[in-house]
Image 1 (spheres, rainbow, N blue to C red):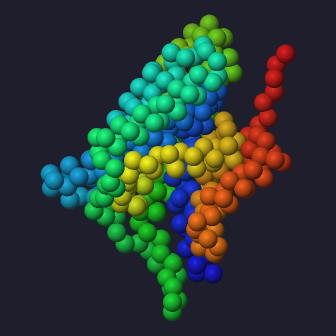
Image 2: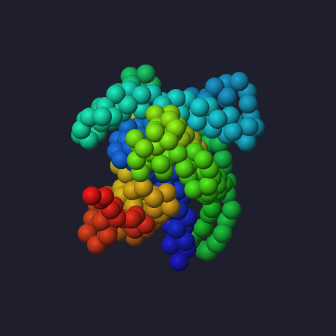
Image 3: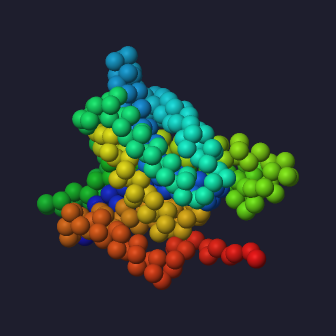
Length: 304
C-alpha cells in the first residue's frame, strides 16, 4: 500500500512534466497540422539554460531559493521562446506551401542540429547542479517504508495545474485563442478576415517553447542533472502522450502525460524498469486500435 502511494506521487510528477511538453506538441499540431519533432530538443536546451542560470546565480551569491527559481524560470522562458521562434522561421515557414513530408524532415534535421549544438558547446557529460529544493512532507510512515511528497514534486504539480488552467483559458476565452482556432480551421479565410496568420503561428511556437522551458526548469530542479540526450527521450514520450490523449486536445495531452507517467512508475516498481517503455507503447497501440483519435480527441471530418 505504501509503495503504491509513493509510486502514485512519482507517476503524477513525471506525468506532469510529460504533459507540459505534450501541450506544446498539441498546440503546434492544432494550428499547422504538423508535429514539431524539434520540440523535445527545445526542452533539452531549456534545461541547459536553467543549469547555466543556476550556476551563475550561485557564483553571484544568490542564496534565496524562491528568487533563484523565479529568475531562472524567467530567463529560461525568454531564451527558449526565442529558440521556438527561430525553429518556426527556419524549419517551418519557408516550407509552409510544400508537401507535408518536407516540414517533417526539416523538423527532424533541426532536432539533430540542436542536439549536436548542445553537445559541442556544453560537452557530452552530464551537467549537475546543487540540490535546490530539499526535504518534503512525510505522508505515511511504517516500520520499513516512508511515503514522502518532496517539495520539488509539489512545485511541479502546482505549476503544471496553474499552467494547464491558464492555457485552457487562453485558448478558449481570449481573442488570441480565437485567432488560433481560426487559423486551425482555415488559414486562408482567417487571413482574409484580417488575422495575421504568420504572427499567430509564430506566437504559438513561442508559447509551446515556453511550456517546454518550464518543464526543463522543473526537471532540472527535480533530478539535478541534465544531458544533451534528454530531449529525444522526453520528446518521444511527450509525443506519445499527445497521441494517446488525442492530438489537438490540451486536456488530452495532459491526461496522456499523466497516464504514461503512472504506467512508467508502477511498471518500474512492480515489474521491470527495463521494460517500462514497452508497456507504455503497448498501451498506446491498444488505445489507438479501438480509438484512433485518442482518449479525448475528436475524429476529423473531411469537408467535400
